[in-house]
Length: 197
Ligand SMILES: [Fe+2]
Ligand SMILES: [Fe+2]
Image (cartoon, rainbow, N blue to C red; front, side):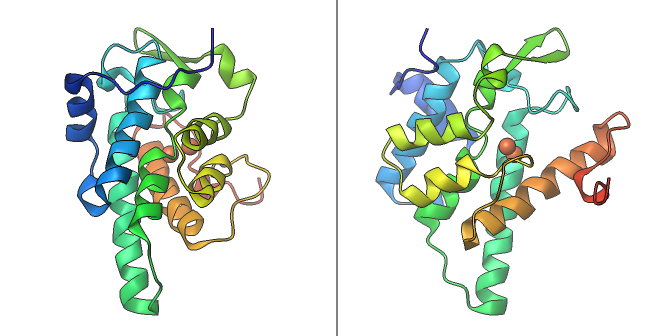
């Protein structure tokens, strides 16, 4: 079995992804189609029948990836707009939006769901989270900055990229994850409290 198979998807499946993802109106038409194809590929290569089933984390089984992705994209765009207004930073939304919307595109391939219990698929012990997403993104010809930023975004990655998109993704991603851990994390320590531990 291949890790994933690039899949364009039928119109209904593409429409379901396009209806779900926030921020597609911020990018050019070709990038919008690439983003939809990336999620269709992850979805059709995963065991999940519905987008709503895809898990976010074993630490917060009731919170779903579908919510997290849009939480991160919305927050990342809020932060980007603040960076533009406050510091005059230049943002390329054709790079930033795919970084935000696709940073966890490999998660459907990394998790299993048994009732309410979230477990790990064998792939999660073979290739790190983020790296598989970066492979998929590379296969769809996204720019190198999208590939490298997704490859290195995870909390346990050896380093994080030194570019504006990586910085914005980091704070948006951990803002969302820590909100979940504070409210639904069943005692798991949020990332912002883990310094020095
Ligand atoms: Fe992630
Ligand atoms: Fe994330």
